Structures are given as structure tokens and as C-alpha cells.
Amino acid sequence: MMERVFRAIRADIRLHMLSVFSVAVAFVCLSATLLVAVNIDAVRAKWSETGRASVYLDPEVEPQTVHTVRQALLAAEGVTEVRFVSSEQAREEIMGNTKDEALASLPSEAFPASLEVTLKDGAAAERIERLASQLKSLPSVEAVETYEAWGERLDKLLRGGTQAALVLLAVVLAAVVSVVGSTMRMALARRRTEVEVLRMVGATDSYVRGPFVIEGAAQGGLGAFLAVTLIGVLFLIVRDSFSGPLGTLLGTSPQFLPVTFCIALVAFGASVGALSAFASLRRLIENPAT
Amino acid sequence: MQQISADHLQGRLDGPGEEQQAPDELDELPTKAFRPALRGDQRFDRSAAHRDILVFEDVHKAYRADVPVLKGLTTSVARGEFLFVTGPSGAGKSTLLRMIYAAENADSGRILFLGRDVCRLTGSSIPYLRRNIGVVFQDFKLVQNWTVSQNVAVSLEVLGVPDKIVRRRVGEALERVGLGGRGQDRAAALSGGEQQRAAIARAIVPEPALILADEPTGNLDPQLAVDILGLFEDIHETGVTVLFATHDRSLLDIRPRRVVVLDEGRTTDVRAGLSSDAALAQMRAAS
Image 1 (cartoon, each protein chain N blue to C red):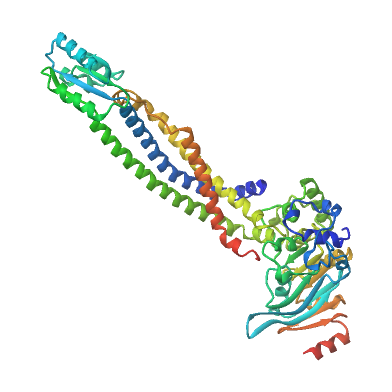
Image 2 (cartoon, each protein chain N blue to C red):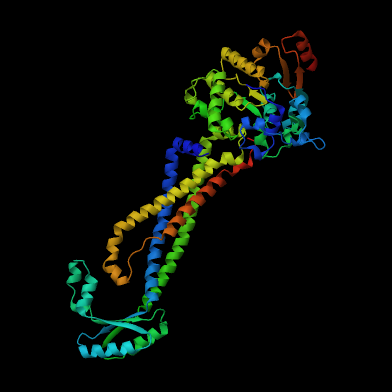
């Protein structure tokens, strides 16, 4: 059977390539959306797992006051670590290895000194908010950022991304069914004599249909594999741009789709391709006499 | 070609379980049930080997109610017989052949092939019927981008015959039809006569019980037509039953064989061939 598959693909190589390319385009959209969603989820997970708060201090604050506030924070319930970041350190962390002149020319007020507070994993939002309001009442504290609003925004973004991925999944499904189905119908039309001959010499339905279904699966699977590979290459190219200051700011490095996701995408492509090919040969199956 | 045993043929009709059995292996298998011919507690009916290979019982067929193609065809074909089927275009020659290999159903009546009514076969049984019948068409029906060998081998590949045996038997079949050494040529590179020979090789390579030839000389010049007829006669000499449908009267005249004439639904069975005076008288009486 595989020999018939290879023979058919060789004979209609352009048609099959076109189909694989079309399927790949559809899968690129889905893979890209999934990639964005996976990274948003990683950031959200990072921020929600570790309760964090940044306590921005008055620029004129005395070191003694900083020490007192730090000790008070360490004594508070749920606080595991308090780290003082001076204005210079903040600039260095943001700048990293970049030599961005615009960033370097910013005044020191743009990088206020802060106390970075780490809370116990899964610290309740109300407790963090209560602590923030207590800190705000201190005279040497200018502002407190608990990142809760950012977490909510990321949640919304993730929900949007998930919805977009679901819509794209439907689009990809329709695209694969349409492309593979059309390709198979065209292949069937071109190979009508072959099918007639097979039926005439006593081939069973599965023997006639088998190569078409395998070709459909190959087109779907190969299209998905190509898309994942392409997204992977693009990810490698742009990864460095995101893993510098942005990575530091977000607290996590860019991640590629998990291997299970990639395998699932290829399996999904192959399955939909096979089913589309099977369905497109329905008429052939319904009329076995000819 | 070796003489086909009845048990061998019945075994091949037996269904999906045999799909992977090579014909050579089938020869050694105990014969399996040939279900419609079962009698009592026998697993198969041995007397089937001595009965007519093909029996038509009051077969009616019409595409339109007012234009019957076959009106009560009742005849039989013995094992190893060579039978011409003739009549004008549209008389129902192809329909008759298509009904034998279950590409068409009769409106009423029975067509018994090896004792089994082909009109009552389920869709899944039809492939196993066709493995016992070689069909040759006017338009050859070769896959043009396949080689000649690939076109011939397909008849054995569907049976699951091992590659080595396929290669040997395809080579033998091509030798028999005069295409030895042409196996690697593309079908498209062959002339019309050669393509028909390749189609005949495809029909005979699985050693079927019956060969149906549907206007096999229709696309060939008169000399090639006679050559092809001669080839069918050679095949027939090995014991294969041949039904040869043609509207070419000249072929019928040069071979005094039994002829079934179809015309406007009527059927005339002329056992002595159309070249005799008695036959003409029979034809006149029938009309």
C-alpha cells in the first residue's frame, strides 16, 4: 500500500505540495497564537505564584528609615524576603546588557529606589492589599505596586488569547478539511482509472481508500509539522530580543510551545487530514459497484 | 496457464478472510464453504464443479420502462466455453457483462456464477466475486503513468500475493500476450494493440475462471482485431471460459462459435455460430 502512496505522491507532487503548504499556513496562525498564549500564561503563572510588591521610597529617604521599614516588613505575616534596590541598581537591572542611549539618558527619578517584597506562595490578595495600604501610610513611602492589576490584565489577555486560539482552531479545522478534501477529490478525479481498475480486479473498499487516507494524513501532519518548525525557527530568531530587559521586567524568559503541544498539533493535523480524505471519498464508498 | 480447479475458485469467493492468501497457497488450502451451493452438512458442493459456470434465469433489465434491454434472458454457459455476445450498439451487450461482475443489478431473475447469485451479493462480497473474473474493455483501462508491469501486477497485489511471485507471474503473463521485455515501459508508450495486450495480461494473470471481453477490438484495426481474438482463443484453449462481446460481424464470421444475439431486449442463442444457414434461419424465426 505504501508503494501506491509514494507512487501517487510522485505522480502528483505539485498538488500534494500545494496542499501541504496551504495546511501549513493555517497551522502557522494557530501555532503563533498558541505560542503567545503560552507565554502570557507563563508570565501570569509566575506573577500569581509568587506574591510580589514593590515599595517605592522617597528619593530623600534616610538609610536608617529604609532599614526600619525593611525590618517592619520582614516582621509582617506572609513576607519571606525584602530586598532593597537602590536607584543605581534599578537602572542597572533595567539596562542589563543593552546600550540603549535613550534608556541611559533617563534621569535617576525614572529609577526610584525600592524595597522588593516577596510574599509566601499563594499569599491571599486581600492580605497583600492590606499590607500595601499600611505601607502607603508611611511618610517615606511614595507608592506601592502589588501587581494585582497587572495579573488581572494578564488574565484578561490570556482569556482573549484562549478564545482567539479556539476560533483559530475552528478556522484551521475548516481549512484542513477543505484543503485536504479538495486535494483528495482532485486526486481521485485524476486517478479515476486507477480506482476503476482496482475495483474491477477485486480490491476491497479499504484497499482502494487506504492510500488516499494515508495521503490525507501525510498532508495534514506534514503541514502542521512544517508550521511548528517555521514558528520554532522564528522563535529562535526573536527570542534574544525578548529575553533581555523585557524578560527581567516580566520575571520570565520567552518559552516555546511544549513538546506535547507540538506533537498534539502534528497529530491533530494528521488526524483531520485522514478524516477529511476519508470523508471526501464517501461517494466512492457509497457506490462500490462501479 | 494451469487448469483452474473448482475448489480453488470457490475458495476465492469465500470472503475477507482470504484477502492475504496467495493463489498458489490457496491451491493447497482445504476448500471453504461456497455458501449458496451448500447442501446438507457439506461445507461446499463438489457437484458445482460439473455444473455450468454461468446461468441466466429469466433475467430482466431496463433503464427505462418502455425500453427493455433484456427481456427474460435464460441461458447458460458451460465451463471452458467460448461464447460471443453480439448485437447492435445499445442492445445490452455491455450491460449483460456488467451484470455478471455485479457492476449492474438485474431488475429481476437470477445470474448464477459458480452457483452463486451475483445479483444478491452484498457490497462487501463483490470484490471476492471479481477476483474470479477477468475483464477486458474496449478502452483498455490502463493507468497511463504506471508501467506495464505495475498495470498487470495490480490484479495479484489485491490478492496479497508476495512480490516475488507477482514478479514471476507478471513476467509470464506478459510473455503470453507477446509483451515480454516491455514490462518497464510506461503504459502510455504502448500502441493501441499493445495496450490491449497488456489489459489482457492483467485479466489473465490471476488465472480467473471467466474472462469477459467487452468490445476488446473496438479501438483496433481489423488485422489487430483478429490477432486479439486469436489471443483470447489461446487463453480459452487453456480451459478458461470466455465471453466475448462484439458488434463486429466479421469476427463472428471467421470463427464458427456459439453466439448470443441481443436485439431490442430479445435474445437469440445460436449454438452453431452465425455463419451457417441454419443459424440464419434461426435468427429469422426469432425476429
